[in-house]
Image (cartoon, rainbow, N blue to C red; front, side, top):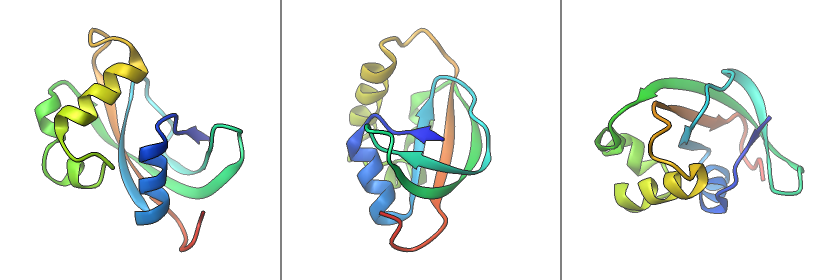
Length: 104
């Protein structure tokens, strides 16, 4: 299962059926499911690893437009908040897609 601590990103995924997310550790790819803070299953998803992230500027463009954030700076601030460190690079970028309509 994949857990989204940032409610903004979870809500974006549930509404738009796709989101890009940054993780400190590698995550399994393929079919999985996501949960909310209480551990409730929210949706079935397909997870694709985009790759290692060494430069935050690469989050611009398509990734930003499907991240749930308005600016790269907002996204970076959330990454730092959740992971409490900028020094634990590389991070990993994933595309998470809901596998069905109305998954919330």
